[in-house]
Length: 187
Image (cartoon, rainbow, N blue to C red; front, side, top):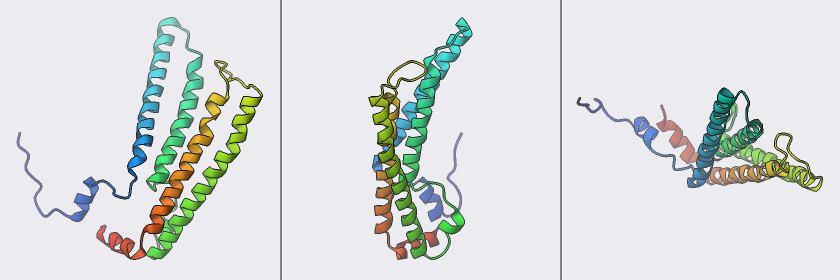
């Protein structure tokens, strides 16, 4: 089998698809690896529970509790990666319309809103962790201290807030003129 190179001129659009995004932080590997690890753990736990249930007609009691915890961690870690990559939910009609200066201000406003929201969640969830610790709450499934689970909410929320501040800094450094020329190159 021989493969022939594509015929015709190579456009900037086809090259930019394969090129890595220079605006993306290199430290996103943390979120990417955490996502892989959590997904692998979820798959292994679920597979082990299915095997045990199939062969013994009973199941591990702890798998549901751990799986729910891991799914929450997965959602928060993915949210952090989405904020850092500027892929969070927005209304494209408003976010991509108008002048480059308007788009820049809206991007900055979105980053500030995300940073404030997750900063507030981080601060308020510390109280939840403290209450879990102070009152000795235990998890319903396996009876471990509840704060083992709840401690991750303020930590990952602070990470998301930091990612939003990083996005705000990156968006603030951009000049509207460079955004217009970058937007013209796209089909």
